[in-house]
Image 1 (spheres, rainbow, N blue to C red):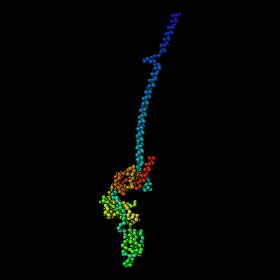
Image 2 (image 1 turned 30 degrees about the vertical axis):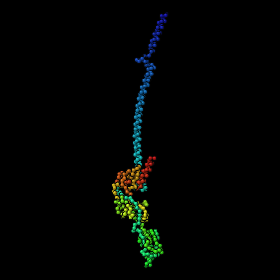
Image 3 (image 1 turned 45 degrees about the vertical axis):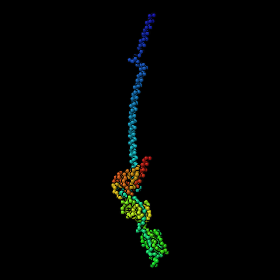
Image 4 (image 1 turned 60 degrees about the vertical axis):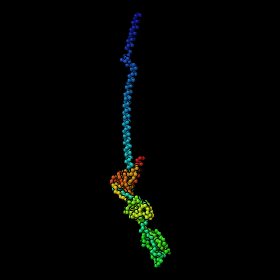
Length: 363
């Protein structure tokens, strides 16, 4: 019986060992069980690491691509911005240099054009002087014989004609009456006798004819060689310009260091009076040049002298280089071509219109 129990115990122990051996998991070459937690953790870490690196690579590529794209966009944007600014600046500059005015509006505004071409520039000497009565236009009227003045027919300031009766005198010697008449047309500047008085050696009347005056101009030694008879002279009096020519050159009566150049001026309306101060330009040289414009055509734009050239209804400011000039014309050295149609009068209206358009464009 005891032996039977021992045998049963041995069989149960052997059966238990076999079962335990069957249930023990197989090991890998590294000694780690495939299903062990360490194995799963390692695989999970590896699997996690690999996508992370891939993601990192993708992220790096994406970042580099984004930077490149942004850089390209920025460059393109910069180029586009610079091109836009340049285009806008060109448009703004072009806008400020020209304007459109219809033919009807130009005519209504008095905008006149001329064709640029050759012309003359007159060189001159500037001087000054005064107006005087020519000797032949001044008359001092005397009585032919001393006697009693029985009649006076005119008063100071009256206009008289040549041969008009001025007074009647009774001669002391013959006791005959004789008439005193005006020797010239003119105005009674002075009356020195009344009826009932005795005429003597003094003048009874002084008569002036102011329909013609002389301009007496001072020419100093530095300018003497350039001044001659028959030269054209432009005389300025109270804002008016008169043209004449030199009729005589004489030394100064008071031995002053200048000579007197005289020019005749018509004065039918008595706008000028003897004694008035004047200035004058004596033309000493006439120079022929290839290209001239009227002085009124010149305008200053942004510190440059410019002329407005017309093409249809478009007026464009063209910068020019100027040379010699006189009262009417200015020589153009560069910037304008012969045959160009330019604004010769009221060019300031074109300048104002361009300025107004430029201000509106900036706004």
